[in-house]
Image 1 (cartoon, rainbow, N blue to C red):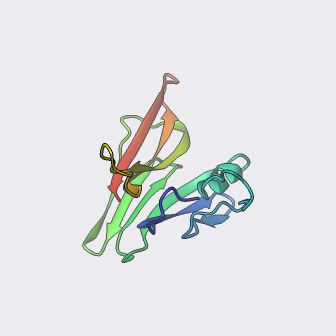
Image 2 (cartoon, rainbow, N blue to C red):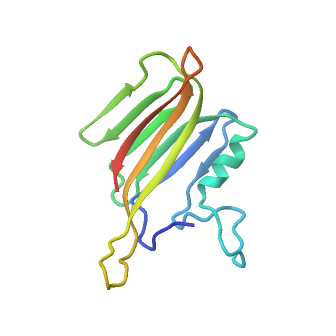
Image 3 (cartoon, rainbow, N blue to C red):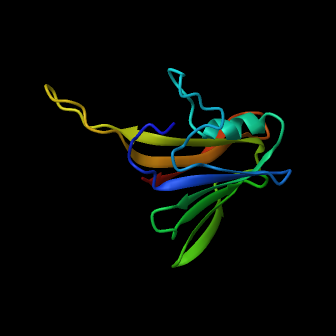
Length: 149
């Protein structure tokens, strides 16, 4: 489940090498959500579950507030892309091709708090998408971009 009661600005779409598409629901509810559970994971758990047996091909964040921005990753070649009405950009953050790429995605949350006062509502400060992969020496490198929330 989402860690904020505010609507999420960006929702993700995951596309796998077998053609399966998993889209994040607006409430970020995991497909195996249990109302009686003390805690439930976010819908991203569905991506991780399916990734155990299938390769994630692309991962895209789309602005659902106005639909004019998109950020994505092709995990096959490590290319990132951005798109908005003013143009698009495709780029790599790799110095050398990495192997065994695995998705990185999370929302960085902030919560205002002052001494002696109740904490404010948590909000998404920024979204982080990218991947980790191994270089030619077997060392893990992380490549991520940050998107203001």
